[in-house]
Image 1 (cartoon, rainbow over the protein chains, first blue to last red):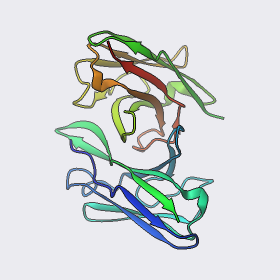
Image 2 (cartoon, rainbow over the protein chains, first blue to last red; image 1 turned 120 degrees about the vertical axis):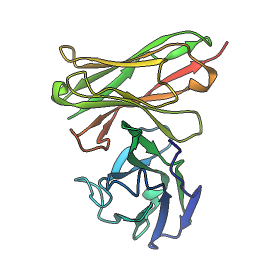
Image 3 (cartoon, helix red, strand yellow; image 1 turned 120 degrees about the horizontal axis):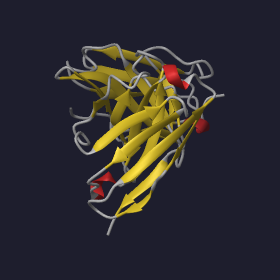
Length: 113
Length: 119
């Protein structure tokens, strides 16, 4: 199972909106509405930001939103803030020849200019 | 609150073995689906293995299948990862993570334990 494809970096100024993509295949993102997104700060554990493509866990700012079209999922951060500077990883459930499998993207580094 | 605490990491020679543990608290461990995920230095996240609440429904990534074994002791609220025939490319921080049952995402993560495979 190949990793999902994410841009290496995305940047924006405070207050702007940015969107990062996550491209998979018809075996993962395209087949299941089971995309999740994680924020990771240096030296820290990942934190769940979005699940089931569009759902936000309690406590996560509504500035974070998710979407999906075909084999590509996206994470949008609105009203960018300095605290949003981090690495972001997408993840999708996939069926690997009948076996459960999860695949991550390579990560996108968000820089607040 | 939910706490996951990994332990057992360290330095091991290529071909060696190591057993990681993940102690869980603040949740009903016996009904929780648990995963192992790793992150090589400077790299992205990689899913490794899942075990359902009753110890069945075990699946592995192709990269560790046949070398790693996931297990759990519900009486001790502990998850394990037995790692055999370790390679240099297994060097990583290993995280345990909890999945809300049949929801296919990870809502809680441990702080990770570093495994270094080097001679």
